[in-house]
Length: 194
Image (cartoon, rainbow, N blue to C red; front, top):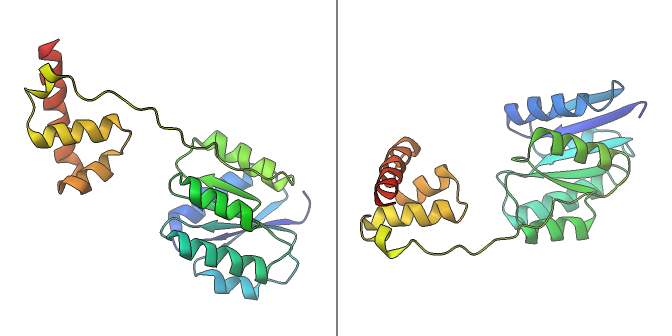
């Protein structure tokens, strides 16, 4: 991978630093160039770059992501475009891969999975995250439900369904710290019933 450049496009400084470190772990010849502004900076990059564009799609909706990917591919048709999503969304993954992204990485994946995915993509292999599969879970048993408030039941259902603490807290209009405190009460209640 000589003379290889990874262009990291993100307005988030922590994203640029984190992915810059991960890319640098791949090969000592990889050079990272960070772009704090949006995709328009790619116009300044020489055409037919040998390398990749890691596009931070964290705060984009599906339409913005598709528009950004198409713009990126039109400006840098020779680059390997890698979309980095904050969370798994099978519709976005399928659309991105169908439109020509070389790969899609979920930011919340373990670092080794991200590094392995980057390595495979930069070696020319198309890479997509595994589809999300949801396993239906039983509802809260009646003997426990009777001991919980309506809000505690909502919290427990959200957490059982795999929702994050911050998303559940936002949904219920509380801080994550308050949610954790209430979840401790729920756990104490459940343990007391067993």
